[in-house]
Image 1 (cartoon, rainbow, N blue to C red):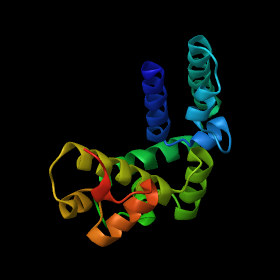
Image 2 (tube, helix red, strand yellow):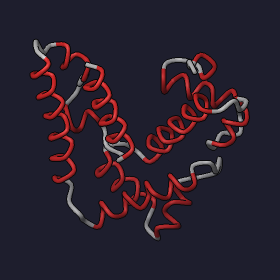
Image 3 (tube, rainbow, N blue to C red):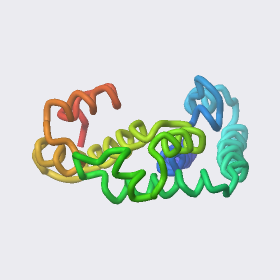
Length: 171
């Protein structure tokens, strides 16, 4: 069961890092834990995990290599390279990609199933969580490293995103 749980964890991380949503791939209310616990044997669990991976692969295959997809991927990459900048804005991203802000917002939402701001927050929160778990840096330093100039605001965003305060994350 541990190996299967690990495989599902890797898959969920991959989906998030690719900028996709589990809801778009698996449907509303998807819970891999519930799915696996409903299986009676290890073989059924293994087959279910394989099915999860196939759905993920099929979802990506279904995405077209269109101009809008290229723009969305470029925006995602720009965010990932500049997330630490607390002044990072849609205007910065659209200026870098030489596209209209409204067009960029629409294309990103269509391709990634989330807004630019949602992706930026998600990416920053993942980085912050890693830093909290892997370093002994102070919370204020971590907040600044991931693009938040106000540690209180960062803590509120972290709690809203993960459901727990950054100080309560276990190392």
